[in-house]
Image 1 (cartoon, helix red, strand yellow):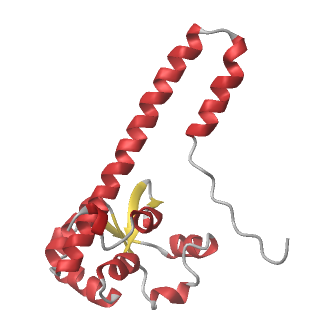
Image 2 (cartoon, rainbow, N blue to C red):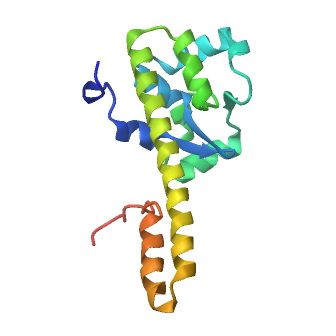
Length: 169
């Protein structure tokens, strides 16, 4: 299967990656949806293979983190989790999932997720390099270019997600 024939759009994967506890993660119920399995099936497979998932591969969210996700509209309601606190999987944990959920779809989706993580890392590294070069240029040129440099820095910032207003505009 080529990249053009991917099972899941890159935007869907990219939009599923959250930062929790300082790590990029995808939540268990989202991974289950992407893999085409029930969340309880994914959780059971993980619980049967806990030795494969050390703390830097996976962790379970606490009530405060769940409340924060609900308040940020990442999930519609706490009941959405089915009475259980979800797991958060790091890139390494997601890679390990392909060994415990051995379906063709799960393997293909994992490949797509790994590619998305790699692209994100490359974009971050590229922005860091660009920022360094911009700093060097800024030191060489006087204040007449300060507005230009500021505009470039603003363009480098990721877009801020705005909440859709409720009601009529």
